[in-house]
Image (cartoon, rainbow, N blue to C red):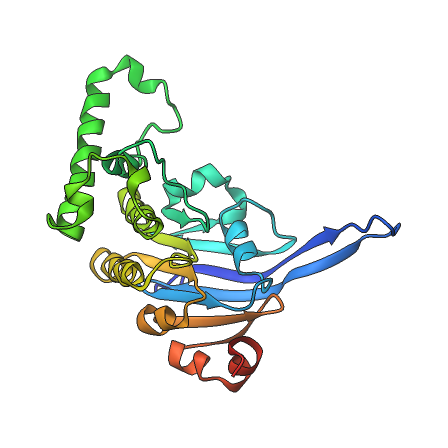
Length: 274
């Protein structure tokens, strides 16, 4: 195991079958082509590239929502190595992997605080009826979850923040940017070591991009979390990412610091249109 690496993606390939109604044969669309990529511990790693470059497909493979055709993905955690292809999606949280999806997953009829509580990792979550036999233990766990949620709101956002002041109000009243910020903060309830964030700032206004950026910085620099994110806002990448990978045609085409990648002539021509 390499001590400064948390995730190693080795020669991963994935294709999809495209069916044409007017044709007898099907075409195979190669989305990931022997992709190699590493995520370093305690850093924010950004994936950039055009739509169809394979970024979300890669996230779905790491999350075990779809299978790769070849290659391997290894998670390094607490002096252990985990072959992620041996795990199911619901098992990844216990390995320390959390994910933010492109679309919002806020429960609008629940309060802000209850939306945070959903992210808490209960030790017996895979055995939902276990606590029926030990109600005292269940109350103890619920108390710890509530205390952690309140601590996040108070220490991370502060008592002047709308999350703290409106913590018992339904989340449906929040703006889209506030909901994305709440979703990102909810990941802090899970004690994750690696967070996969799929376009966390898409469709939100600059003030909330700033708040999400500050939150990610706290996660990484104060909590030791590693972040792999897909992002189309190049200012956000330049401001917050430590490492940047430009994906093109299913491969890691260029990587380095954000300044190096965004200043690369090929990247500027193929992606930035400069």
